[in-house]
Length: 180
Image (cartoon, rainbow, N blue to C red; front, side, top):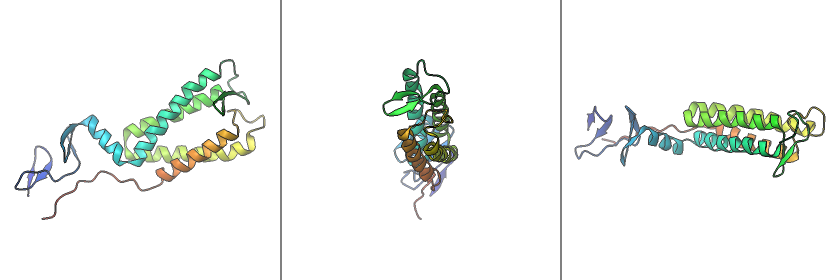
């Protein structure tokens, strides 16, 4: 085998690249050829459950935050009872929180595996806390984010998924070489 210093791959005498994934100078070399850096991000996204989950949840929470403002016109910012978004109660503060969490998850998901793991774990822990506290605060004056039973179930389910993926071992793309 000889090393090809220009493409960053190893090749056999027949000249076929043996690295499955290699990034150098804004290009990605795979079994199927050289791709742009943006395509490399998609390849990395498919190989990382943390990045995929953070990106997906981030986009969904951003959308929910934006849609929430459509149903909370005229609702006080800290109202204990908000407008209904399907079966979930939201107020403007709840919408802002969804936008912030969505942005954190989306940015982390589009960033790196390490950032995605940290964001998934942190947001999962916060949602676990909110889900548990929501069980006790739902019908009190301390319910400043307008939580209801459906919100609590969703927050607990999100916490389980985010923590499960965030605390699990994520596979990083690794170069594979042929045995001599």
